[in-house]
Amino acid sequence: MSAQADDPMLVPRPIGTTKYNNVPYSMRSISFVRHYRWIGLVEPFPLARRLALLLYLCVPKKNHSVQSFRPTTMQKGNHGMSAPTTNSTIYQALREVSKRQPDKVALIFNGREYTYDELVKRIDGVADKLAVLGISKGDAVAVFSQNRPEFLFCYFATAKLGGIFVPLNFNLTTAEVEYILDHSEAKLLFHDEHVADLKALNLPEGTSHRIEDLADLSGVDSSAGQVDIDIDEDLLIAYTSGSTGQPKAVALSNRAQLNAAASFKEMFGLSPEDTTVLGAPLGFLLGLSTISMVSLLAGAKVVVNRRFHPAEILDALIKHKATLFHGVPTMFSMMLEYAEQQNARYDLSQMRALICSGSPLLDELRKRFKDRFGKDLQNYFGMTECYPVFGRRSDDPVEPPGGSVGKLAPGAAVRVLDENGRDCPKGTHGELLLKAPSMVKRYHKDPELTAASYADGWFKTGDIGYEDEQGYVYITGRIKDLIRRGGANVAPVEIENVLLKHPDVLSAAVVGVPDRIFAEVPVAYVVKKDDSPLTGEELITFASQSLAKFKLPATVYFEAKLPLGKTGKIDKKALRAIWDEAAAAQPA
Image 1: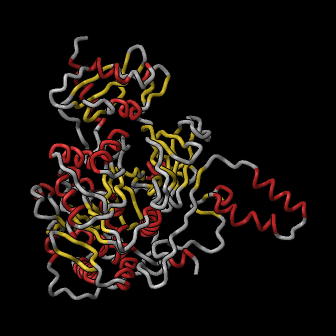
Image 2 (image 1 turned 180 degrees about the vertical axis):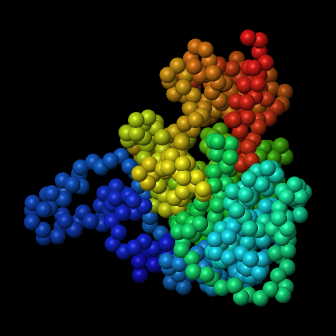
Image 3 (image 1 turned 120 degrees about the vertical axis):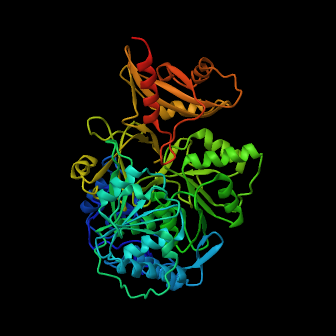
């Protein structure tokens, strides 16, 4: 049996295709060469034919890097689902896991355990309730809640009915929720008891329901069957920050989600023996899909925390003997700061992976975290539109170089283009263009943004970076964040990494601001340790030991704290607004 047939989370491709994600085989990784070269060179073909094939293999191809997709083959009788068919959904995939390990614990929340069998029964009950409330194929269901099992029940139940799930970040304002509900045309909204401003939404009667009601399914018959679903139709609309002020609506399909799960499973070696602690909000794709869905489809255990708090997460990692934890840099920074303040040593020896994504993992945070906890943070890169893309495979014994986000994930491909759209040589900075098995095809109701975001089937990330000769990828900033000082490009993250090496600096962010002479210069916003006598001039002098003069901050501003966006990242737009306000107040 093929690896594809054995793997429960890889959506089969048509037999005989000559492209994978529109990437010609000649651009695929060395696995293609291994498979075909010996046929021509060893078989008894005419000498001329063998020489021609040898010449073809030696001719350099375009500078595209592609990682072949090699799903882990499951052992007979082991965990997992059978290979998805053309009408597979994430619900069907989860049901197959339940059939193989019905009594294994799937979720833990507030001390309450749900086995895989009970999980599927709960999902079926919620699907019945949604059907009674009028949800059918193509209808959108939104959830506005802190983390709780019913959030996940609703996601899989919506998938069962062929509906479209709309997760809402619990920190959104009333106006933002109103926009998303209107834009997605959500037919139902489930909310928890913490939503205080619901009346301000002015929702039609019968539209909103308490999510707590989904915990009580007494009297609901399991009669809603699996509908006929095209797995390339929308399953999920994830709203993510946009440059226009309104969030982008990323439309993801069952195929994209199943392929993402397969790639993650191979990359991080996920299995039923794993336990992961959920600290990220389910209202984000990181919490809903990358952590929860991927873990459940691998047959693992998920410990659901209602919210992120560093002490609670650290305690949960130890209590539940967690093997995996996935978070953004801000989470790891808060965990580190808490442990340092308490002068506490947490034994995380049972953990095999602490995965960091969402924004660049700065070298200084990585070093300090390892010094405190004895565990290395694994950098991982992905986007709502295209993931997973870069990281370190669990079976790779080589630690990636500092500053690198790792190598290509299974099935992913990358191009690095210069300002003229030409492929850059290795080691040269340019815009990163990506492909991955889970790459979305469009933005919901936004054909203009869709057209602007793709080029010949490649997703334009807007990120600046490069790939070295060993295949490690480095992301050095955003195109819109790139500072052009006197014609020279300056990457903010490079400066931030240096500033954070100063022992008195807790956090730092660099933005570009207008300048009469150089057009644009970098300025730094820094949080330093309490009672530190550090001055801006001293910090710039410190940075000059590692940075060229044109990269040095023109000014350092010390702040009590840096503004954070809803995703926990430093809000550089807010920092620019602070600078603009201060500049406007200066006398002409």
